[in-house]
Image (cartoon, rainbow, N blue to C red; front, side, top):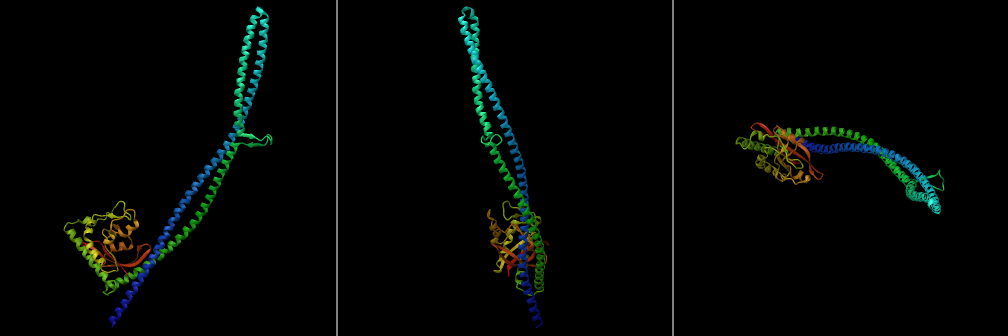
Length: 434
C-alpha cells in the first residue's frame, strides 16, 4: 500500500513537473521572441539615428552651398550693374565718336566745295592757274576720301550704338515715366532676383528639415532608452523562466533515473539504445580504417558557397550519410509524436538529418531551405549545444520550436551521449511532442 502511495505521489510529481516545464517553455519562448523583437527594434532605432545624422550632414552641406549661391548671385548682380554702367559709358563714347565723325564729314564737305571753287577759278586763269588747279583737284579728292571714311565711321558707330544700346537697355532699363531716379530692373536683374528667391527657399527648407531631424533624434533617443530598460527587464524574466524550466527538467530526470516509469521513459530508453548503436558503428568504422580519428572528430566546418541558411561540410560527412540513417530513421518512426532523431557532434553540427529534412537546397528560397534542408548545418542554440555536449546517461530538455509560418510547438527532447573508443563525439537527439 505504501509503495502504491509513493508511486502515486511520484507520478503526480512527474506530471506536475511536466506541466511546469511545458508552461515554462511557452513563457520562455514568448519572452525570448519579445526580447529578440526588442533588440531588433533597438538596432533599427540606431540605424534611424545614423540615417538622421547623415540627413543633418546633408542639410548642413546644402546650407553651405546655398550660402555660397546667395553670395554668388549678389556678386553677379553687382557685376551686371557694373557691366550696365560700363556699357552706358561705351554708348556715350560711341555717340561722341559719331558726333566727331559727323563734324569731320561736314568739314570735308565744305573743304571739297572750297576746292571745287578753287579748281573752277584756276581754270579761268588759264595757264597761270594750272598749277593751282592741280592742287585744288588733289585737295578735292582728299576731301572726298575723308568724307567717305567719316560716313563709314558714322554707319559703324550707328550699328554699334544700336546693339550696345539694346544690351544696356536689357541690363538696366529705366522707366521714362518715373524719371531717372526710378530705375526698373531688366530681364537679367529679374532672373537674378528669381534665382536669389529660389536659393533662399532651398535654404529655408534645409533649415526646417534639420530642425525636424533634431526633434526626431531627441524622441528616438528617448524611445531607445525605454526599450533598453524593457530589454533588461525581459532578460531578467527570461532568466527566471529558465530557472523554472531547469527545475522541471531536473525533476523529470530524477524521477526517470530512479526507475519510475513516466511518459518520457520509452523515449529515454530508445535514445540511449540508439546512441549506443551509433557509437558501435563509429567504433567499427574507426577500427576497420573506413575513417581516421582526426577526420571523425573534424571540427573544421567548411562553408558551402551560395547556401542560405549556411551549410558546411566536414571530413566525416560521407560516413555520416552512410551510417546514421540506419539508426535515425527507425527512431523517427518510433511514435507519431516524434519530430526528428539526429546525431549531432559536440558543437551542434548535423551532418545528416532525417530523410524528410535532408533535401538539397533550392537557390533563392531561404524559407523552404530552412524547413527542408536541415542537414550540413550547425544548430548551436541552447538545446542543440546541451544535447551535443551532454555526457550524462541522458539529458531531458523542454523547449518551444518554431515550425514556420508563425506556428510554435512545445516539445521535449531527450539526448544520450555518443562515444567512440572512450572519447566523447556528440549526442543522439530525439525530439517529440507532448
